[in-house]
Length: 334
Image (cartoon, rainbow, N blue to C red):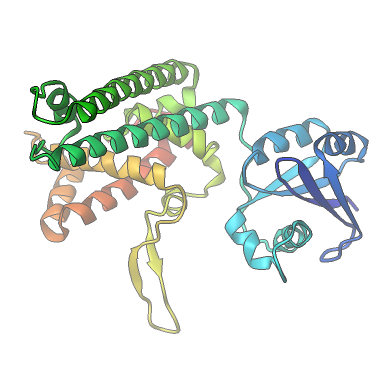
């Protein structure tokens, strides 16, 4: 029988729990970074269970290269199996317990190409957050001096650079101009990342199929490939939509079935990109001279349920389309 080894990862210390029988820890180890690497090389072919947390995909690839098998489990599911206080030892034991639950779906180990796409998106999102914070700070400061800037990022930087002498104190004006320079620098970095993503799309055939879907652009297609990976692990498009949190949350009992708002499970970033793309699709649905059945469905949904609910419904449908074109390796056809 193949050993099952649970590993609680951290930056410098690795808590290892070996199990020869389900639910029972036969041996515990607490290893440093170097000791863990040597342990992988000396260990006979085994089955490793890890949390899908920081550095988990790197270690998953390292463990697989040593001839072992790897299973990554979602951290929020593993947490439920922790008994007692939170320690590295109880976390490792919780991994062994969660591994026994067949209802918990494992997370595939990402390739370096997927990690590259995901890293670029995380860096871009960080730059976007910083840029938004700087622009909002500038608008807030100028409002204190009676200067109101219209809503919209494109209005802030020109308004700061066009400030007349005496409009605000000199020290504040100098700092605000420095913030504008920082914003322009952030925009250059964001454009550089998008340029890198454009080059990666040409080398990633799987990302080219979703690009043919209305509302799916460069960011959405590359983010889906980077964060989701193998679309064939989902039995259907609805399972992908549920993974992204775009299906209703259910609270049913007996003969009463209650469906509420969307579950909002999964990655918020991916869900946001799809919903923003859905808003664009909705905007163009009513402007086409020749409307298809899908356009008519969108227009009717928009009339009955409003823009926000319609956008989420369209995003759900887009996720299903993505699953079809990605699993069948073909372009989108209406």
